[in-house]
Length: 112
Image (tube, rainbow, N blue to C red):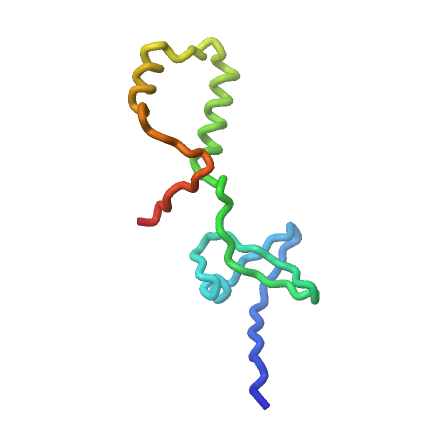
């Protein structure tokens, strides 16, 4: 008969606010640094697993602050909103003339 699978248990504390720190050993097993994304899954038998997750696609650390800045500017300076001039429009159109764009096509990987 084969050897029983070894179970590794690493305790962690959940705070009153429902927060916990992922232990270093678990982060190493998941291939995470000091930050990253994880996902908890409940299996049919009630077992809970934790795995490395891809970051949400919409996450961009600069986007939120930028949109907040734009919203604040629109609220405080609505008179500053100006239409794009015909000349700027023509220059922009000339820059992309002849370039086909498929909005449903996946972007190329940044890893290069």
